[in-house]
Structures are given as C-alpha cells and as structure tokens.
Image 1: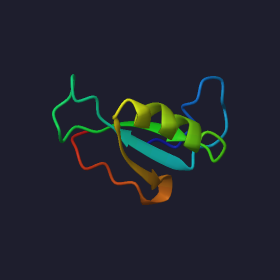
Image 2: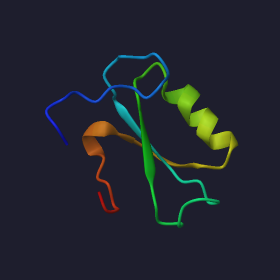
Image 3: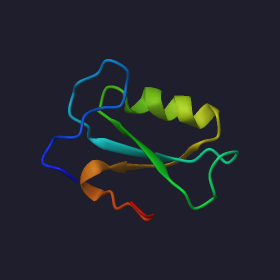
Image 4: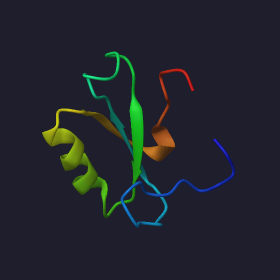
Length: 72
C-alpha cells in the first residue's frame, strides 16, 4: 500500500473507501484469483449487486480487515 488514501471505485466517486469487494471472473481467472474494487459506504451495495448478478462477487470485507491472499 502507499501513503495515498484509497478511494471508491464507483465511477466519478472521490470518497474514501471503506470496503473491499473481492471478485473473480471465472471465464478469465483461476478460481483462487481475486480482483478487488474499493467502495465507500454509499456505493458498497450498488457495486456488490453489479458483481453479484454476474456471479463474480466472492467477498466483501472492511478495508481495515482486508488481507490480499494472492500475489501482489
């Protein structure tokens, strides 16, 4: 991580991130691979639903508790 404050991944949002949405596209990634989007409180549900309806969402974790299990 850098000294920069992580911001929400929602388009146009510049608010500090609070959540990590871990996801995986099974057509492109191995089962253990996790990509991440960051979300503020306001956009967590919207981004989760976007990934969820596609079957990509694997986990939603507070940013302060996130530990990336895969290679950096």
